[in-house]
Amino acid sequence: MYDILVIGSGFAGSVVADRLAREAGKKVLIIEKRDHIGGNCYDKKDEHGILIHQYGPHIFHTNIKEVYDYLSQYTEWYNYSHEVVAKVNGEYIPVPFNLNTLKIAYPDKAEELEKKLIEIYGQGKRVPILDLRENKDEDIQAIADYVYENIFLRYTMKQWGQKPEDIDPAVTGRVPVLVSDDNRYFQDTYQGMPLHGFTPLFEKMLDHENIDVKLSEDAKEHLEFKEDGIYLDGQLFKGEVIYTGALDELFDCKYGRLPYRTLTFDFEYMKEDSFQPKAVVNYTVDEDFTRITEYKKLTGQQAEGTTIMREYPSAYTGENGQIPYYAIINDDNMALYNKYVGLVGKYNNFHLLGRLAEYKYYNIDGIVDKALKLAKEIM
Ligand code: UDP
Image (spheres, rainbow, N blue to C red):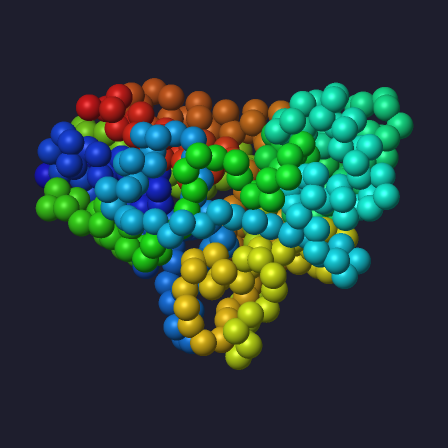
């Protein structure tokens, strides 16, 4: 009855479903474990009427025009440029560390240091902290120490349980030292928030006669991997299967669990109209949580009172209710992941897509781009 089976309805699954249904006229079934669509980008109003992201703050930004144009079919945008500050010893400093942060950290020497940074790296350059630390120049060493101590060390210990130099360099590279006075968190050409939220965007994407969505269903209960192919509810499924969930869990973690970091979110509503200066404040030198998001400031919503959310990271254990958010990329974990990939390699109609299924750190635009490409390939 269906040509395509999609497991999961986050951006990965929803984009593929949308393209194959609309562009190729395929009949698509989406099986979603949760009782809602949208994956971790799901947002909703809380009991005080404040629009919140239930699974942590998601901000859209991209340099890929095709991705921006594609999503723009399904939403208008609130013209928002994300800015983050870190609360360091009672003071708010711009993150990523940039030339404005430099002026706060070194009020007397800023001009001289700025000149040096521009001379060595070039105006507008993005320098990963681990690269900055390699520089032998005394002044640059001092800046690197400041950034490492005040922005990266404690936050990364909380987020990953490891020091910055011991995790995948691409992770800390996401938040480089910025040789410019641009306070934005992202420098991408296109950035913004879906004007009415992420959930309505997903609803529009999936609202098509060729797409059926089954919520609150664990696909694992319906699938069997046999010698001659993949079975759906006891029948050989000849169409394409796009799987966006955790690959180890599909096989009962038989080689051991893939390690992830999880998050606990602590929401709090307050009567005040404003809690903090920016939508996100990072706690980089103290506290047990990594950051506080104030949702109104992210979504542009006008409302009475405000809802904030603290994020507490920890190791994912797979216990009931825990959600695997971040893959921990290193050689051992990739080797384990690849063992699981070996179990599905022989099924030509089975595709792994997304943060979980690919055990990868994707931004929204990265996964939308990848999903558009996979859909084209299948077509
Ligand atoms: N990071 C940090 N301090 C900060 C911001 C980021 O140490 O104030 C490090 C930390 O290791 C984090 C990584 O940079 O996991 C990537 O940060 P990003 O904000 O991109 O993380 P995400 O929003 O994806 O959780």
